[in-house]
Length: 145
Image (tube, rainbow, N blue to C red; front, side):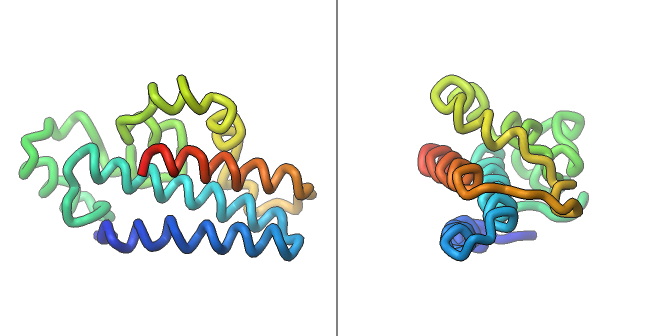
C-alpha cells in the first residue's frame, strides 16, 4: 500500500525535481520526472475516486479488500488497470477524464504522447519541450488536486 500522504509528498517533491533538472539542462530526465509526477497525481485521484482511504493498492489482495469494503463490483477494476504507466487508462479511472480532455486538451495532448519506454532510449530533448511537459503537468495537477 502506498499511503495517500506519500503520494501527496511525491507529487510535490517531483515538481521540484523536474524544475531542478530543467535548470541544469537535464531535459530528458526532467520530462520523465514531470510525467511521473502526473502519473502519481492520477493514482492519487484514483484513490479519492474509489475511496481508497489507506492509499494506493499495490497488491491484488489490497485492491480486493478495497473493492469489498466499498461494495465495488470486482470485475469493474483490476490491479493491472490502475497499477501501470498507461496515462490514458489511469485518466479514465481517475474520474476526471472528461474534465481534463475538455478543459486541458493541449496539456493532455502533450503528456499523453509520452511513453515510459523512452527511458531506455538515447533521445535529444530541447529545453522548450521539457518546459512544456513541466507546465502541462503542473496545470492539470493543480486542477485535479
